[in-house]
Amino acid sequence: MDDIIEKALEFENRKHKFVTTSDRIVASREVKSLILGVNELYKENKDAELMDLMKRLTVIKQKIEKRLKGRPLDAS
Image 1: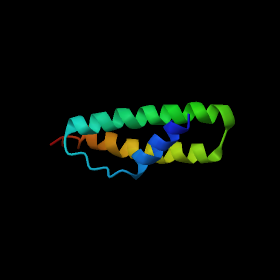
Image 2: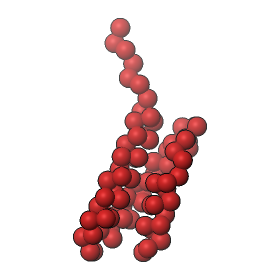
Image 3: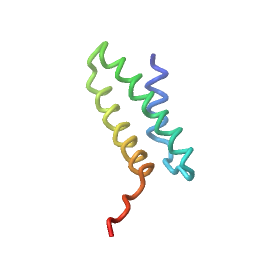
């Protein structure tokens, strides 16, 4: 189970420059699965460090998804 934490930390420290939409979709799915995996560990031992890791990953995920959704069209 420690490999999920290693993967999450590696993802967090990776450069987040996603050129194409498909890169963003893949990254969004990857970070979502990492968050869910860390959450399963958190349920077992309630470690505050795991909660902090999930929060940091969630911020990254929100940025990716915000970029995926794009800008809203003007109503003019």
